[in-house]
Image 1 (cartoon, rainbow, N blue to C red):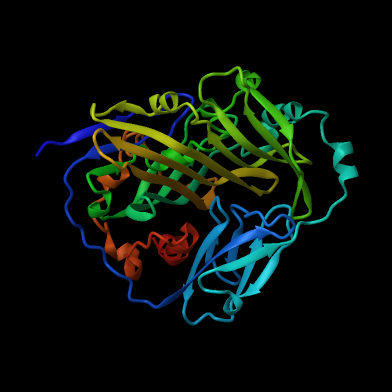
Image 2: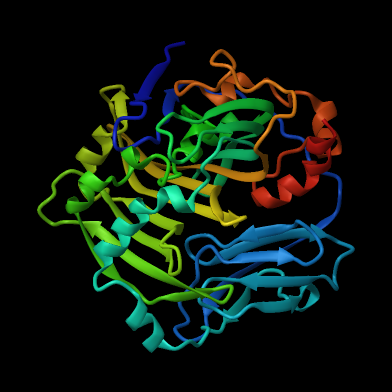
Length: 428
């Protein structure tokens, strides 16, 4: 049986997201089904003033760690146990008033939830913010030493990567990882090691193409653009972009400046566009949402594709990133990141193409500044950039660790998955 490999270049600056496509005949793998009963609520969160959908709205079941986040189109899926009809759902989004809804009041299939914009005085913002957006972005770079973690941290994180063909899940891998994170003032790279990992794959859904992702959790970690400026924007490359102010937001009573950016029209190579969210008091970057410009299909494809069969064309249609930071004791820490890659595979002499979406997502669950007698991550045990997580895991590895939760549910949010195994992580 002949197999074709489409290899995607790994960490070609300034782009770090990479994956492998392997063309092969497929075999069936049966997936287990969860016996526990739960109810799924689906809906969309919109702005009450504009009726536009709101992406990345946080939905949290009060008193629990069960949570989810709306996608780029404002849609959400929230699964809860059947015995929680009176639970309260809290919705929060920067620049909007917090909203609390009783779970049983939601429509299970098509809830439309409206959030009210939060009112604030524009005069104060106009007086205090810099004269132009570029100056503010330069302040972010200048204040890294004061704003971000200045000592080594040892983090525990939950990582998930999914591969979907159209809207159907074909492969999902999850892992609990440890991260040895160097100070933001240190140019050294962070180290990641696998603690526990598992996977679920249904090759039938992939048709004739199986996709594997190189780099695993490193893809999500490198979205920390404050630490890994070389993959994004540096002081030297600021001149490649146009910056402008968007509407400011209020987050937890504090003003957050929004800076829109895009590559200059004179720049030919694919660069980035998106939004930077900057704390008004400290000039710290608190969040970022950005995309790679993929208008030039060939140029965008060349950034990722290293080898492929002659009869196949592969090109990205969307490459998006998100990174969040969390503040503790006056310093900001990397907290969450999400990388989404959507691409098309075209076969010659084939009427229809195939669309795939790869997601790489990681959430920090805990961290400490000292290992308390434990050894750090060695160069030998670290996760390498050319490693494929799915190849490192054999089925449901270590079922005793995952316990009753040894079934992966593609639709569940990463926060819900963490809720299920958090006690076991602490126990081990």
